[in-house]
Structure formats: structure tokens, C-alpha cells
Amino acid sequence: MSKFGENFIWGVATSAYQIEGAFDEDGKGLSIWDTFSNKPGNVMNDENGNVACDHYHMSSSDVKMIADLGVKAYRFSIAWTRILPQGYGEVNQKGIDFYNKLIDDLLANGITPWVTLYHWDLPQTLQDEHDGWLGREIVDHFKNFADICFAAFGDRVKHWITLNEPWVVAILGYGQAVFPPAITSNSAPYLAGHHLLLAHAEAVQIYRQKYQQTQSGVIGITNNCDWREPIDDHPDNIAAAERALEFFLGWFADPVYKGNYPQSMIDRVGDRLPIFTVEEQEMLKGSSDFFGLNHYTTMMVKNDDHSADVEQSVYGNGGISEDQDVILSVDPAWGQTSMGWSIVPWGCRKLLVWIANRYGNPDIYITENGCSFDAEVVNGESADPGRVEFLHGYLEECANAIARGAKLKGYFAWSFMDNFEWALGYSKRFGLVHVDFETLVRTPKTSYHWYRDYIKENH
Ligand code: PNW
Image (tube, rainbow, N blue to C red; front, side):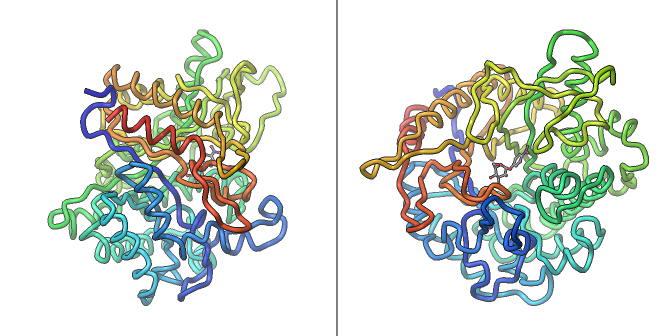
């Protein structure tokens, strides 16, 4: 038997805004990412997702390339504004048609769709009318959108992910102003996060009440988390690393598995952290059929005793660091991707084991893991040895986590193809497939061939 166990699910992942393009076609409304990226100064080189990979027009051939890769699962997201141009109101049939065709194409090719309902592209109308995720109203709007998707696609879609990375939405959108709605605050992230959690729970509740019995699918949430390694074995630093994980993953996973925020957050954030009612706690607890995890990197943690003035990097530093009293750093010996994220495969193993221990050994799916590296296309070949090494290292540590008892059941490489990397535009390439953004020609990279062989060997 393979070291990944029987029926391990091999996949690749993408998201709507990052690949689809056709931003205003066939009745689609504008999302906060359309608006944000079309304003100068927000995205590197003023790039946007107006065309992106033009997947909207090329989905049939993209599905063929996914099938040729040998994966049996494909994770993509539905653009809320294709289905409901304003976020609510009348359904746009052309949007439904697009995803119907994609789903049918996938199934015809033996690929199981894993569908994310929210990968950051909030309808601009809801942003304007309710302050986005700061308004409690978004919870009901999301529930309504989810309901429509279950009804339209649930006869064929059996794997649902409500939200992608609420931590990123809250911190980068409402704390550090890197993503829309570009707010800088040390309290807004906690309010946005609170509504994100409630929206997730409401969507799950409606799925379970109206659809799960007849459609027999599963539903969960995907959270992102880095590993946090204590810088040494001083008890203060060990405690600080644990706290950093609680502020990162515990923030969103504790409510889903235990019904409330981690005590460390309740104690430290104080009245900036909203409180769940007893009914909300009940609704949240157990609201995920599996543990979705996006994992990219590792940082070291030292307890911040405020003896020194430490300058911390902003993007992706692990949240609001003053609430955590942690000082993050990286080991200069670690390799780095072109994103500047450290390559630390053993961090992935430690995180998987940490999740298994903290959350009662749930089924875990890595719904994203990967790296950005540049690749040159020479004679129709695109070489990316760094990505091969990265994926190999991380997958071997996934197997090690399984050997230690973690129930990792599947792995989705991020990403199927190069795409719009949010505020960094097209400058970062995460794909197994190279995309020439001038011609939109796709070329498999070395990593594509490597992943195909690796899956075959470990089946
Ligand atoms: C994830 N951080 O984003 C997203 O789910 C993808 O859409 C994205 O392309 C991919 O990872 C690579 O960035 C993240 O700051 C963005 O820790 C930022 C962070 C983590 C994940």
C-alpha cells in the first residue's frame, strides 16, 4: 500500500478571480477585486484580473490538461457575481451555465469537483451597502448565495468548501490594507472574522438541513496556517509559538471544532473580539465535515517581552503581532521561494500533527500547498526544478505526518496554472502549467510531469 494510504485524493487547485477573466461578460457583476485591481496603485504593475488566464473561454481545454495530469480532483471557486451580479436578487442564468458546463466537463473526464464558494471576490454592491464583512447582513447574503449554489450544482458537486482562508480576508483586507477593502485597523479584522465564521456556519447549516441527506456530499471550511517553531526551548518561547498558532489557525478552527475562540485570544484581544451567543456556538461547533488546510511556510517565534524595539514585516507576518507578543523570524539557512516565503517541509509535518492533536484527529485535506518560482520556456519546455524539489519535500513530510497518525486524506497542489497572484499581479508564478499572459498559451512545466509521475508511483 502507498505511504499515503488507500483512496488518497490527488488534486490541483485554482480560484475564480485568479484565472477566469471575462470580468464583465455574460451579466457578471463587479466584485471588490475587480474594483480594487482596476484602480492604479493597488496591484503591482497596475495589473488586474480582467482577462487573467481567460479560463472563462478556455475551460474545456484546461479540463483536458487537468485530466492529462492524472489528478482525480480539481478545486475551483465560484464567482459570486456571476451567479448574483449584485450579491443578491435575480440569478444570472449565464453564470449558472458556465459552472454547469465546467462541472459536467470535469465529471466526463473522471475528475471530482471540489467547489469553494468564497475565494475573496465579494460583490462590490455588498461592500458598498454593508461595509463588506463588517456588516452582519453579509452573513445572510452568503447563506442565500450558498443555498442557490447547492440547489444548482449539488446534484453533481459532492465536496463543498464554504470559505477560503478567512484569516487572509480578515488580516490582509481589514487589518493591513493589502487586499480590498484595504482597511488598516487592529479591531476590524476580529469583527470581519466573526462574520466570516457565522457565514460559514449558516451555509453549513442550510446544506445539512436542505441538501446533505439527498445529495450526500460533504462540506467544510479551508483555513490557512504557517507553522510556528519556537526559536529555542525556553518555556516563554515555546508558549509564544503555541500562542501564535492559536491566533493564526485557532482563531478560525477553534470555533468550528470547539465552539469558541481560543482562550489566549479572548484574554488578549478583550472587547475587540466579538462574543458568540450560545446558539451561535452550537451552530459553529462541528460545522466542518473535514479539516481544509492551506499551508505554505514556517517562521520562528520568540516571546516579545518588549525589551527591544523590533521592526516586523507586514505582509503575512501572522496577524496583529502586538496582540500576540511574538517576534517572528526566519532561519537564514532556509531556502526561499520567489515570494520570499521560506521552504521548510518539516513545518508541514509538525502542523499536521498539531492539528491532529488539537482537533481530535479529523480528516485533513491540504487544499493548497505550493510555491512561486520563475520558469523559463525554452523549446516549448518550461523548467522549474525549484518547484519539483519543493513539492517533493512537502509531500514526503505529508507522508511522515500520516505515519505519525495524522489523517491526511488528500492533497491539492496550488496551483494548476500560473495566475493572478492578487496584489502581486502576474509577477509570481505558482503554476504547474506555465501561462504566457500575452498569448494565453499554456505549457506544462517540469513540475507538471513530475507530479503526474509521483501520483502514479504513490497510488
Ligand atoms: C493563498 N499570507 O493566499 C490563496 O488561497 C491563493 O489564492 C493564493 O494564490 C496563494 O495562497 C498564494 O499566495 C495567501 O500572507 C495569501 O500568509 C497570503 C498569505 C497566505 C495565503
